[in-house]
Image (cartoon, rainbow, N blue to C red; front, top):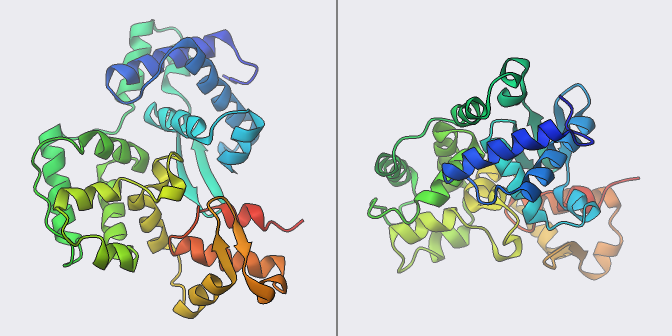
Length: 297
């Protein structure tokens, strides 16, 4: 079924799937207007991906075109991923998306009643342990991989559980999240490794992994430290001289990269992009800005 246009049946089934997620506490907002926006987004992605089901886009650009806040589109992407209708990951190019055939919209599911559609949407979710067991597993993994400068975490209370569940849904499943957690703990910047943990508890240190830099506030789960630091660990090692040079020539103003000094004016567009991407890989700025800002015509 092609959502684009948008078909009434597609909106109705999107509404059902969102309500199922809302009952599980996996998303907030399942009213008709949200369903219309989510269905429209899915249809737009179908058209842009053509027959491949794969595409890459810059969410901030699409949000501007649709007169929405980027956080709204990111929340809708999270909902679609939790429904099992797509999977996505933030990269230096923007957001890579892989569409999946919605189970509740397949031909076999089209003849089923609303109850069956809700069940299908629910069973598409990755299986997770119960709250206490989940916290214990995360605590064990965190304590095993944390730097020696970070305090141990003891799973007391469930204050971190909602954010952990949200991060696991973004990662795809618990095992992938734990792998990303280990990468982030190994790749964290020096300030967070040595200065931040002083006088803080293990719960506070784990919580900062489920948060983002102030410049990325409200931009979505993919900018949380556990994913931004973990993504940096996937990148080829950057020589410290490259990052140091980039820091001398470019600065982040909260929205874009700006040149510093006469030397920066002499840089080609390609050189600016490479230096900005090195800084983004090191955890500075917002990933994907360099490719967008310094795109060659």
